[in-house]
Length: 113
Length: 114
Image (cartoon, rainbow over all chains, first blue to last red; front, side, top):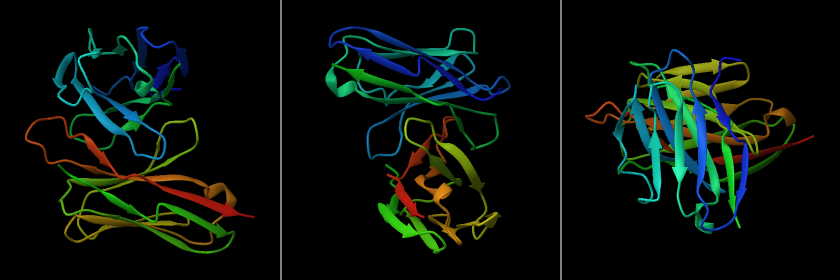
């Protein structure tokens, strides 16, 4: 399978804990995106990488959210000191340069108790 | 801020019926993408339209991009229970940077009853 993969698929954590999610994009895609989706809504853009450079991060929801893509391949999204309002589906997508079309992974469902 | 409004929000129809879902904005988009999402899964791309007035057909699904690139529609002919899902439209931005992030509508939850 050469699609976008995300791990874990589900994460349940207690309020105040830190969580980290991983995204492996399609191998030839150098653009990578993170989105958040809450129930009944479309995905909401969080941040964007071109290769290893994080070129857009102003939409990250707070300073508790951070993302990395150290070698321009996989990416991680970390949420520190989780809150119940962070419960959502976190989606990763990737695309090729020159194309608008983004391909999504299956998402990580986060539940904060 | 670019916004996309999708209608209807919910649609429940009988197998064999036709339906149309609309996606409207006051903003111009570089492209318009339609996705279908199942519960607990990520959105799966159905089509990308990039030219104003463009029409694309995918079996029983017909997608149209408005002439002004501000709106789009998805028409399903003879709907089947397997068409059930959340349909999302997403517009590509003309941002000055390279992000070109997608702006999503809030989705249309389609249920096709057998």
